[in-house]
Image 1: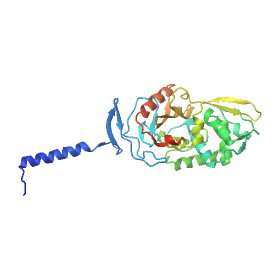
Image 2: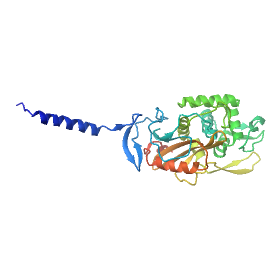
Image 3: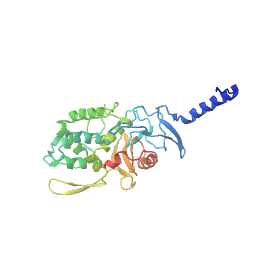
Length: 318
């Protein structure tokens, strides 16, 4: 039997059905991610689906949460498990990144492998300032020993040794750095030396450095080096020196487990830092900070990010 409804009742049912659909459809940001409202006054976006590897959000950082206020001219905070942009500002702006680019130097060195190969220091390697380990021409060390000292104490003479050993010259190594960055999806970076001292034509962005940091975070040797607060370097004559990590967050913020500092007059204070808690991992790139409060800013932003990052992921691999 055919049932007939009054026209007014039929219209009411259609309206209710449309309202139900509107409620069940999540709101989407300009980048296409689903928004879940807010937490503690800050907008929170849902994690996006991802495949394991080095994937990061491919769209420019336009609609991510602003997060707590920090002083960096450019910054980007990402979920290291997913590559999800959590917060950022001017992350596509090219600028000098100082010694933070040494993690890219380390990645190129790691690509060559054979870390126990011995390398002899040459006179041309030590003609650099200001931060040096005091290597002497003729000294011989393994790549591994040099790499750890390089990442922990940010020694520019060690950078030259590793670069020349790898590619034959600084310029050839710099070309390999830029090529490596391109292979990681860094489209706004160009490198001219292995240590980050100011030179024309050398620049990167917060977003590109975050991509490089994600690759470094997944490398067990690099990650082991940058998490160490101290490292004992044994010189050729048998004397030992204890090197203290330039990253002042280590030992102060328990969740912090790396990564690299940087400073020049041109770049200002720069810092790439990582933190882990309960299977959640974040990477923060800060560039162009003009005050000493870069450490406080990093703690504030990473604690904020750890509350919003996705659990599990790469943490189980380390």
